[in-house]
Image 1 (cartoon, rainbow, N blue to C red):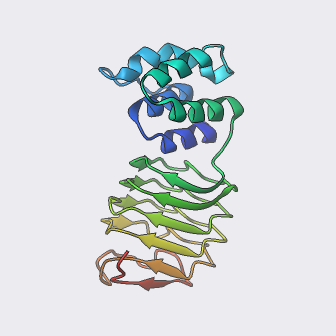
Image 2: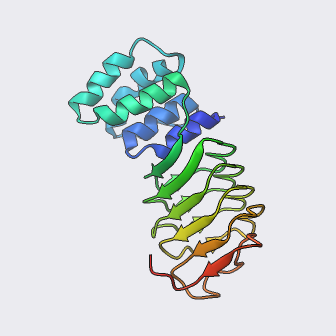
Image 3: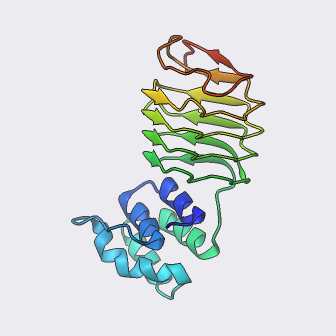
Length: 203
């Protein structure tokens, strides 16, 4: 099973090659056939142990104009680093428990997300705000639960469902801004007992 740091990389990857790099490290995830990622499989597999092919793979990436993204991923893999501070996630899917218990994230903006998995940001106790893109379709159970410093959440679109306990234990969460009308998405305020849901908000 993928460890938390690899899951973080998978969630943050913003192109198929970057996602496959993380997937190979995680083990047990197939390399998509017919993609450019296939030729990198051997190189990326060596990164798990800080292999000597990192420079070669980086140079390959540079030739494709992806040097900055590759370098960031390589450094994270080799140094076991995690995202810190205010982060932007461009992935479409954030897997369950992906950022769970990360104490370094202070804010998150999701720009293309379609699905936020169960417990994706569970127990991220220093997370202060979350901005969720208009593309979001589902938010899982306990996705942001027990984020003790979470103060505001903004939805830019209207998901089809939000887990009833999504914000359980977020006692400082006072404001949830949404563009839809009351009753359009069920189970509000989704466990946020102290929050006011600001309906029909233009964001």
